[in-house]
Image (tube, rainbow, N blue to C red; front, top):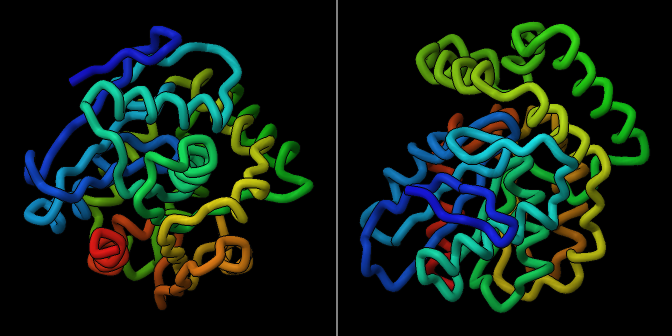
Length: 263
């Protein structure tokens, strides 16, 4: 299904789970992934909530405008998607890039948030981030995405998970390689310049922060900063997991979201 944003961008999305459930969850994927990223978690929660998954602009089946992106823009896309499907509010959650968008959404549209799930993410990548993310964008543009696969695989998943779940790894590689290069580069630049720290103190909805013990893309100190900045939030480290916890440890992520559904 598709919805149109305020600036006429087509956004692809799915609704799954219980159509008339009293609980709603909106899930936002990681950089260079698509809405299939959340399939293991959505499957586990399908009997308990109505679940919205979507392809961010520049990703998946959504439009891929070659323009500068911002986290605020992506957050407004999600608000427009809420309007399209008739949702006033929901538990909003995201992983990595999706967590940044979730933070922006919670900051810009606080009345539409009944709970916040932040998985392997950060409010700020640091002072060196613009240069680091520009380097990744430039490498993709000059060498193609294949040149990033070895780097990505070891960041995404632990060694043990990659060995035991080659089909999951292969699917992520397939999704990654299908990205539009210009859109990927602009999304990298967006993450490099994103600074969402000013939103943290204003988040009043129940919030749960989770990070993989071996996550070196958004390491434990970044998650600790989220927990410290959001009053009343919970914090959990998952032993042995790396960056894409919704795929590597979906039971743990589902448990965090289930707790948010209960308020």
